[in-house]
Amino acid sequence: MAQGQSESGAGPARLQQFQRVGKGTAFANDISSLVGRSLFFAEFSREDISILAAYMDIYRAPTDQIIIRESDGGDFMLLVIEGAVNILKKGMRGEQQHMTRAGPGMTLGEMSMIDGEPRFATCIATEPTVFAVLHRDDMAKIILDQPGLGSKILVKLVSMLAARLRQTSARLLKFMERGNL
Image 1: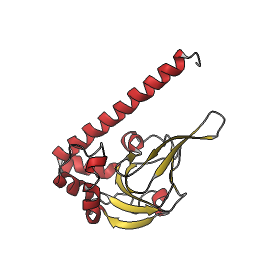
Image 2: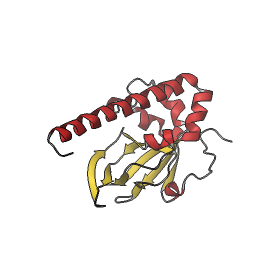
Image 3: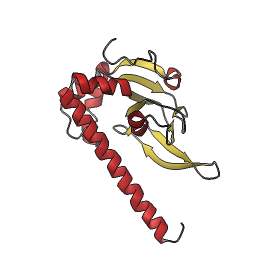
Image 4: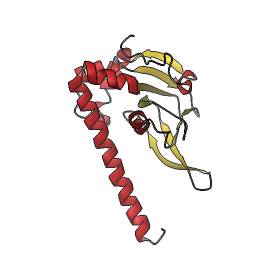
């Protein structure tokens, strides 16, 4: 099987609706240009990014297209290269609540890529958006083929998820202190 090719071939049905632009190697310079704007790539060298890009596929989503749907299965994460994405979460009454906006250099879908659980939120392109996709199978290949880079990616993902958990815990504590729970 070719490097960067997911065992599922064309990838999950969700990705089949997007225009596949090509392999990540063709976008390595675009991804490298995100280093200053991306916490994910803060400690990555140009060579690291070039190697990682070889395991990724690039897609384009039009404005208002759902890229990730809450509660869907998913085995990939994505990196926004160009454009912007709104992240929405269903409230207790089923209404969509805006959580945040993601732009170039931000990653989405890391939790499902790591644990295989359903998607936590819905991500919708708010303008034409180009994004790179890294599948769980390809992440496993990176760990085997490039252990130093694999370790760097895993440490970065764990650090990002821990920071998000801390932020969420702090917000929950404030909410609880106001007597809302």
